[in-house]
Every structure is written in structure tokens, then in C-alpha cells.
Image 1 (cartoon, rainbow, N blue to C red):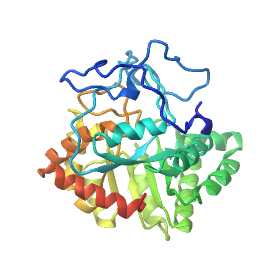
Image 2 (image 1 turned 90 degrees about the horizontal axis):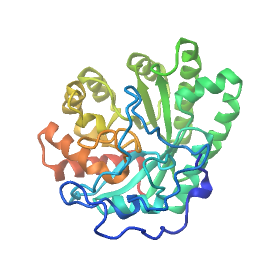
Image 3 (image 1 turned 90 degrees about the vertical axis):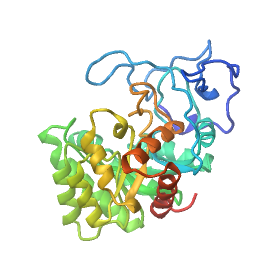
Image 4 (image 1 turned 30 degrees about the vertical axis):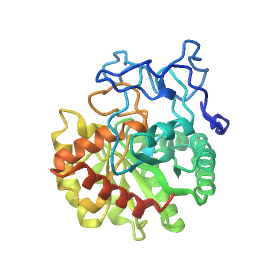
Length: 336
């Protein structure tokens, strides 16, 4: 798995020439994302995305996509995991943000969802000024740690790291009933409430992971007397009804690659319903790569694909949506 030592101080030398790895429309894959002939395939225990699709188990295409057309108005990827390796290359945080900046993605929120990745996050945000951080114990990990009696110790370490001035959010926390069975629900809900309290006490935003658990997530939020001022539904996955609930309570909705997938009409209906001042964008990289590159590795430089589809859904100009998203991001996380 990645550790803080993986955050290198300088970008690596590009092993590929400028004409290599050109995309289908003539757009080049960013230099740092082109594999070299001598690329190290990985090390045992390294944190990385699986090379097969989660449900179908089909092999994924592991080459990174070409860079999209740059955005004229820069935005921020408000949720990414730069410590997860994917594809055929190892890309450091500086290279990742250089590639993002070249297409109008001015920064990103690096998210640590367990103690190890939270440590990586602190090292990353100290090394790279275009990154801010979020740290928490992911709900699936909360259930597993509670079963082993290790959750309290992990939360204590998260609380210490969340106090870092460049950590601007507690997350991702929440509920995930897709991977964790009924036996883990209690631990997930307890950890969710703990993270909400931590974010409130520290005056930071909270990033919510909500999978197959909309009703309980909303119930816990409404039952919490002292919520954080800024609540973000990371990788928003609800329908128009949930979007209206978020509108009512001023909760932010962050849209990722799934809003570009053909089958997700309900998600696009939610985006159309969302208040402009509550809309954010993210990659959740290396996961959830937007169309037309679904299944390939994802990275912050692919945000423009999602932004453009979001603008189509909302019936607005790309520049106007980008400006709104950028302003919303500053209100939630502050300045870099």
C-alpha cells in the first residue's frame, strides 16, 4: 500500500516522447500517465484498484484516457484518492496536479479513508499546494475495525490528523449497506455520528459516502442537533427526491462520472433538480471514470468530461457551470 514516503518532492522524468500514446481524437495522454517499457508493475500489498470490473469480472482496459479539451474557467476536483494506483503507471501527486492544471482543474481534495491513507493525505497536502485534504474512517472499514475491537484507536488517530489546517473536511464517512451486511450497520451508524460530531467541533465540512442507505443517512443527519455547517454528499447517487431534500437543508451534492453513464437518468434528474449553489464536481479517482472511458483508470485531469455533461443536463453554458462550481467549492473548503 502507498505510504507518505510515496509523495515525491519533484516530478519524474517523462519516459515517453510527445507523440506517444495519442488518443482517438488526436489528444495525447498526459505524459506522466504514459507507461514506460520498464514500468514497475507494482509491489506486494500496494493499494490499487482491481484490474477487473467489480460485477462482471471482465478485464478492464488499463491505459489512461487522452486528456479532454481544457475548461476555460477552472474548477476543483473535490474528491480524489491519489494514493490508489491504477493502470500501468505510478504517478506522484505533483504530476497528477500538473496534468489536471493543463485542462483547467486547478486543485483537488485528496481523501484519506483509513489511517494509512490519512497519513498519505497529510504528506500530500504538505508537499503539493494544489491539494487540500479530507480524512476519516470509511464506513466499510468502520464495521471491520469494530468487529476486531480496533475502531476507537483508529478514530483517535483520525481526530488528531483532522486538526491539520489544510485538512478541510472530515470524510469520507457515512453508510454503505452494499458491502456491509446487517451485522455491521450499528458500527457504521455509530462511526458516522462520531465523524459528524468531529467535523462540527473542528468547524470543517463533512463528506458523506452514501451507498444503498439514503433513508438512514438523511435520518441521522436530521437527528443530529449540531451538524457541520457544510455537508457534502460525495459521489451523489440519489434521485430527484433526495436532491430536493438536499436543496431544503442546504446540503451540497457532488457529481462524479456516473452522471455521464447512459443508464443513469434518475441521477441526471437529480442534477437538474439541484440548486446551483449546492453543486460540486469530483472524480473519486481512480474509480468511476466518465463516459466514454468507463472502466479505464480515472484521474483529476478527466474532470472536464463530467463538467461538460453536467452543463448539458442543466441546460447551461460550460463556463457558467464551471464558475458556479468553483464558487461553491471555495465556500465549502476555503482557499488553497
